[in-house]
Amino acid sequence: MKLRHLAFLLLFSATAQAEEIGCVTTAWKLIGANHRVCVYAFDDPKIPGVTCHVSQAKAGGIKGSLGLAEDPSQFSIACRQVGPVALPADLPESEIVFSENTSLLFKETAIHRSYDAKRKVLIYLAISRRLIEGAPANAISTVPVMPWGSVAERH
Image 1 (cartoon, rainbow, N blue to C red):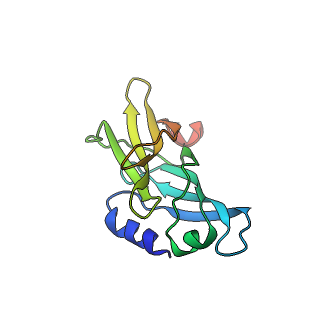
Image 2 (image 1 turned 60 degrees about the vertical axis):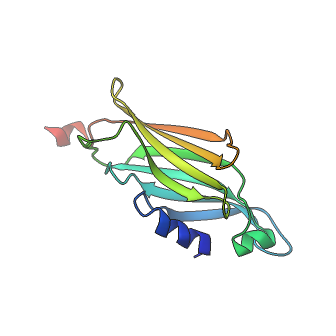
């Protein structure tokens, strides 16, 4: 496990923890790690039954091998209902459910969860920002909160 990933797990233990599903090489590097896109899964820590998958570009080369590279702000998110969903009574209007540093000091990717009560939809917004200057990279996924299982199982 890379040092920055270990630091991330220690610093953000209150948010969801990502599980690496797999990576695909996007550019071969003669020296150091290849550039890649990796897919991670995380379960919403407060809403059982919801899982998000995030793909994120990872910089390679010598800096990437040493954990010093700044990963590009290129990612995608897809969240789905994977089981019964019960919303907690004290669900905040908006909160960060996942966060990862994508450079050694100044950049992070964060996933915010909001709830659209009128439409009964959970909204997951992934953003990447530089802590110094900001960055507009973002992606969104929604999960309608619906009964789980077949009609026959509910009777």
